[in-house]
Amino acid sequence: MTLETDYGIVEYEADSLITFADGLFGFPDLKNYLFLTLDEEDDSTLLMQSVEDQNVGFALINPYYLCPDYNPQLTWEELSCLNAKENGELSYYTICTIHSNYLENTVNLKCPLVINPNTRQGMQVILADSPYECRHTLGSFPSVADSANTDEGSDKHADSAAQKK
Image: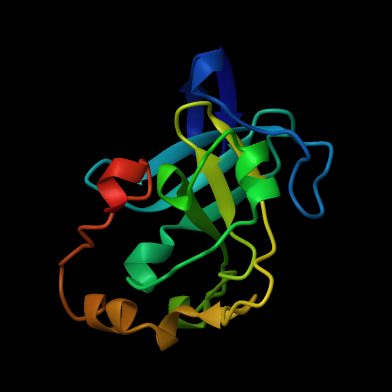
């Protein structure tokens, strides 16, 4: 299959899609997304492109790159919906809101996207009773401020549970 994006035409297989059965907050009817890497050697940022509406896409950031001690705790109901027994089996991503000054960009650590990499099923959750907020500025994270002055990337990977440990 092919998908026309702002970055050109992308070829993909149906089994490479991530499915959000309930959609995302504000986009309940868009259920299937393709994750696109922006840099083959750096998985800290991704583009999540809707295959149902080519005008809808989200910039995602690996929360462990920003906050190495990020510790989202899902309820047993959320784990069950994702066919997982524990948080460690899952991958987490945060949606980034883009501004002209990248240090003013924000990420939503309170409502991450959670994906079971084995089933390719995902959901967006609201972390109840968490210290995380919906609008953390990128400039407030030491890893971002430090990377503005170096070429170092993160060794944390969000694409599989095994790589996160």
